[in-house]
Amino acid sequence: MLAFALDMTEAEETRDTLRRHVEAHDETLNHLADAVAIFGPSKRLAFHNTAFQTLFNIDPAWLDERPTHAELLDRLRQRRLLPEVIDYAGWKANELDFYGAAEAAPDDSWSLPDGRTLRVVRQPHPLGGVLLLFSDITDELKLRSRFNAQIQVQKATLDKLNDAVAVFGSDGRIRLHNEAFDTFWGVSGEALDAAGDFDAVAALCQSTMPDPALWLGLKARVADPDPESRVPISGEGRTADGRIASWQTRPLPDGATLVAFSDITARRGLEQALAAKAQALEESTALKREFVGSVSYELRTPLTTIVGYSELLETQADLPERSRQHAGAIRVAASQLAGSIDDVLDMAQIDAGEMELTLGDVRVSDLLEEAAATVRERIEGRGAVLTVTCPTGLKPIRADAQRVGQALEYLLDNAARAVSEGGAVTLTAEAAPSEVRIRVEDTGRGIPYHLQAHVFDRFVKRERGGPGVGLALVKALVELHGGWAEVESEPGKGAAFILHLPLEAAGVAAPPELRLG
Image (tube, rainbow, N blue to C red; front, top):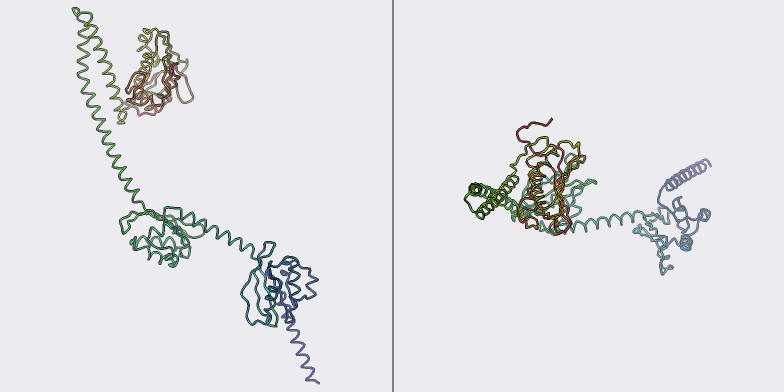
């Protein structure tokens, strides 16, 4: 009896221990995020965790009645929580055939009508029956789909690039490469994918670009985890077939490294050609400038002689009147030619960057009056009126009085040729916050619209004054002060030239000059 009592006590302790193990097991399964259902050898539900009831939203009381596996499938089908199949009876039979299997079945997936996707794991239970594990992988599939789509977009984008691009992960393995990369190195995409790590890829590419220092430097940027080493670098090299290649690396936020190669052989050839052309153009410009200067200086001596002798002839008392008129015409033409030569020399000096401004404080009113005095007689001789307007209290500007006066005299001379009897020429000045605007306006025939864009170009045929450099010189002199010139005209209604002069000229001053008090 004592032995029997001891056996009974040991059995109870064993059952109690087993019960505690089962409860602990069930409690553990209840804390899982995945849904778990265990069916016993009788194919009835022996256990389900909270996640199972939540996943399928089944009445807990009904589950406590321990339905059979077949009844559970029928209930889920009624609520449209099973995959929609044509032969439900055959599909259900396959689900129930797993009882008695010795090994776990391959993972399966259920696509539910509500859009969710479940991963289903079936495995035999140690105490008999079946253990089912359900995981909601809907978000995982969406994320994977978006990731794959992003990878495809990246590959499609890279394939459209002309540069050879490859992306290496932080582990040194190649992740992406475009078609240009395969073509640049003469290696198939399959060979690159099979190569895997950076060393194997470099071994495939070294036959095209055998510089070992290049590949060591690139490997340091790809494989070194030190943030200070993962900095963008670039360089150039020459391939075995004579091409010039530039390369650069860019660290990516996820720890990967982008490596790009470009064939710049044509670009370097074009740069050399452009450099040679620029040098030839510079030499040609210098030669032209030297030629213009030399010819202009050579012409000045005979012109001075012509002007002097023509003036002498005009003073001869016994010279017939007609001959005196001819001598005067020669003097005027020679003087005009001398003025044109001076304009060409000034332009050549400006183009060479050799003209310096003699800066001083210039009263704008005095500037206008002096310029008007040079052409007043001519304008009034044509029956026109010259009006000068300058506001009182206009402060002096820092400028080269001779050069600004030269520009105004040319504009006034241009206006004098344009006006006719009854016309008018106005010379006005107005102050602005940072500049003074001087306006020369006439009531002549104006400038056609198609010529206005080129009116300041040099050696261009114009309807006002013919070809020359006068207006181009005006523009250059104003720009030398840091200002600019513009034209306003309506054909048939005259033209206006406006000079925008800054209060402080930007040019380099010549030797110091006296300032006005």
